[in-house]
Image 1 (cartoon, rainbow, N blue to C red):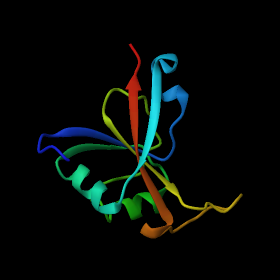
Image 2 (image 1 turned 90 degrees about the horizontal axis):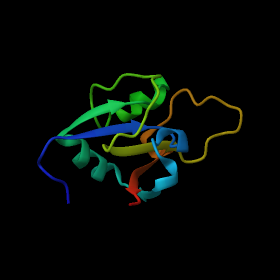
Image 3 (image 1 turned 60 degrees about the vertical axis):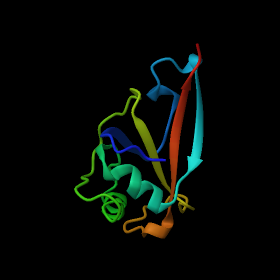
Length: 114
């Protein structure tokens, strides 16, 4: 269920241990999302995009308008995280214009251990 409150959401194209402040005290879970679920999540959210590939950002703008490529570094800070990746990226090749159906989308859920 999606809350009507404004929430912060980060969109990333990968998730690494270095994105966590204390990786030794965290468990990371990945949950597959549909495009409709992503639309609902982003509807009442402040979105921070960390995807720099212009073609992927163009596809993401079919779900959430106003995103621009961003090559900034991401550090997890309690926000909701959506990970987007190509379903089968061709090895050693740049995909200039992916399509929405070329993306696989996950929610990254970080559980902090006490």
